[in-house]
Length: 167
Image (cartoon, rainbow, N blue to C red):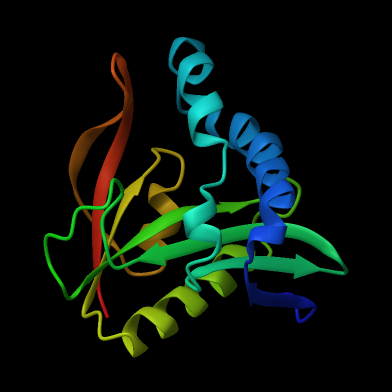
């Protein structure tokens, strides 16, 4: 990992920076694994930060030399707010700037996610991974549970992969 990486919790004041990170990274990173017909409808929805996540205390920013180059979160509730298992956390919006991949940014974010989720009493982490991120999640200990479809809005579904890791 690059020793210049700082990982810190986000605040509502980071909304514009996170939106900018999502908007520049997701189209580039997801393009090899998703057809344009899916990206054209999904990107406007997944490339927006959720204010409640930013203020949660479990959403983190990775900063290198003052540049915001990664973000990632976990929540005790699943995306959409469901609380199926009180000991299961859910990884949310983990992304690295497309110009900073393979430099330990994602691993630094996941280390913070693992530490804080475990400290909060979580015994397992689940995620709805993009096809693109499956190898990364496997490298940090997640296992594939199966392919899923994530409903983004009525009529807009996003193919993903359900994954899980014990803490």
